[in-house]
Length: 454
Image (cartoon, rainbow, N blue to C red; front, side, top):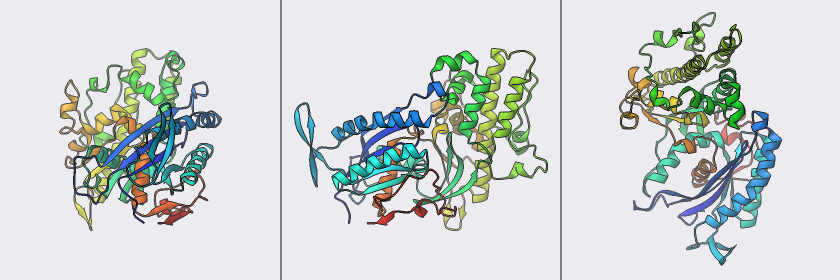
């Protein structure tokens, strides 16, 4: 049954140590274009657990934070629901008396992948809301949500009646602390994984590099566990625009090591395997780069000077991100980037996930015009892809605030799934592992049990 539109719903996101709640309203896609936005966020807040003393995410600290923060966030979100103007409504108590609010059409929540204790807290809370309001539940795969985030951004900025962009199919590079995947996003529930990491995810690798490179006093005084963000600020204290990055113009240049002024050089991942065949493999690897950095830091007879640490930080980020870029190029070449392959045409690359908020990664992909006028030139000098013959490929990065896990992207993906006819049964359970590829062993998004059609 088609819901009365515009529709609104409440969304929860608790995959790890972030507690996030959002209220999203979407316009009726069948209405003619108007001045009203296709989507509107009435509420979106996120609180991150304080894991500083553990130098990483501690499951019990994350769980305690969810238990403490989730109910107050939901209370504020309920007060932010649109006022009742159609359909079902309910009364909300406030300091000024009762307010009549529009009852959500459904409740969406992160079902996986992630930490089971955190996921279960959010999922059980969402079930309670769905039961209380007698509305459907949507359990969302948060990696699918990362891939679809640019469509949320477009909906928030576009007018009602417009179709979400980018249109499918497109290429997705999903990079975070737990995942590094290159994905062919073919349809709403069909995201074929073309490449993944052989060892550690890039976000985890960068955090480990940061622990080696950063001076101890910076780590201790920061109060952060997002060491990758610290490493970026350390490498580029005045912003990454100050770094005159020049993308490699050839494959040979890309695979070569660049000697530093200190005598060390960081080899690109997979460039020096025994057979040499892995250098052209559509896969990622970051463990070797981490080991090389560890050797530089621990085998020196003297403590690394600050200038050398800064240069090592910049080189570490450059080599790691060029490795990502090299696999994007390979995938575009295999998929005929910008050219028709069967009935498909790949002309868009989406870069999403927590690591996508790194400004140096954005610089490398978006442009090399970095002195003073970066913003003005970012759309015409997209350094890495342009210099290698892919100037026609459109690159999309969500705003940094929407790159990390958040309830807004869960809300949007829940909306797309709901409008496609999907709901989750109330017996659904949280999933620590949940692929987005239908060819995976678990069957991908729709392979999870407890889906039902409206």
